[in-house]
Image 1 (cartoon, helix red, strand yellow):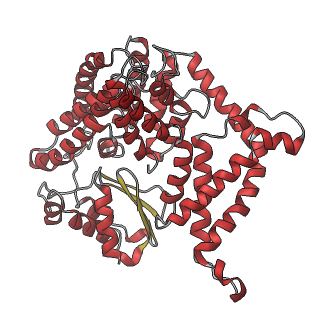
Image 2 (cartoon, helix red, strand yellow; image 1 turned 135 degrees about the vertical axis):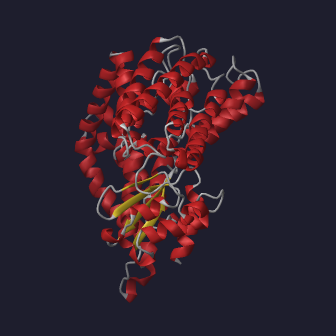
Image 3 (cartoon, one colour; image 1 turned 120 degrees about the vertical axis):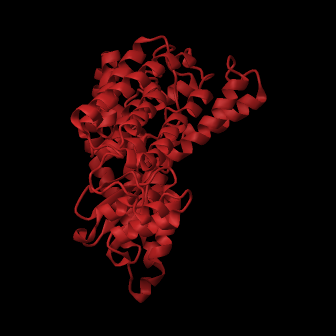
Length: 467
């Protein structure tokens, strides 16, 4: 999420630029041109930002050495597999795939190489004669060696992967609204395992030539078509999921309504304004998976329907009100404010669908759990106090088995990501007493705690407790 966090900056700069000069795209106003170029510098270099961001984000401690290693890997892959280099090495024309190396997919690979080499070798101790290259200084050297091997593999594998991605993208594009609907459904279904970002890179960025997000902001797309893989998310994130929160609140047990309100209100606001939906989705994803399936289907329908409507809206981060406002004057925007009409309809659909299913099937959504008698535990009272991140962190640490059971820590947009030594010591009920949205166990030793948009502050306090 680190490189993705750069996108709102681009959205603000370019959004203001397009508002100043919506017809000339900067040619009529020097301030607009200045802002558009500044935002474009971020958008145009997203692949390298992915390499650096993934390098830092996947390292054990967020060390900048991992970012440097990722950059080295990126530069080597770009140079060694460039069409000119390929022709020099093989004395033959380079496949089209090698002309498309400057994409987020290769950036992610470079970041993973840099982070992996850092995690494994940053504590390496060499003999006295080579002591200067011990520790972090050897990471770049190891990364270069590993990248050489990976590059040789990519020389054979990348054309196959690239052609597969292009074929998949072309198939989806050729089916029009149906393809957009399939993409929307898969986008939500893949969230529990985090693979929705890989899928997004195919449609939003220039991995397979679709580049819906880039073309929407640059004006290099087709009016009325570009934006079809973004528009349908606005009714869901701004109206549908907040309405689902209202339904979950209305169906919560009377004794638990206050607790449910605190979670659901903040989650609904984050979905409406900035398009961050994980706090809502993880609140019912595992408690009531059938609801999540309905949510994924409704998302697919929204993208399909919005593709057929004369509406195009886009975003640089997610489909919230702020991005809708900033993108209203973007080159490929088409009557973006009309999104309110399907949005209000979707709000009603989500509310009644969620309320009906929750009551009919007695689904255990927030405020309907049966693990206590309805009284608010003392730890939860403290943890849900606004801004009391230290108490939340302390309750989470106790539930994870104490600091002696923590192998490594990290966080993404909304979740603490913890590796534990002994999974039997994890007490999920204790963790949930901190007022968190959910606990996910991807593997025996991995625990993810859904905190919300202020996860960084909880993580900071968590690190202090470990120290």
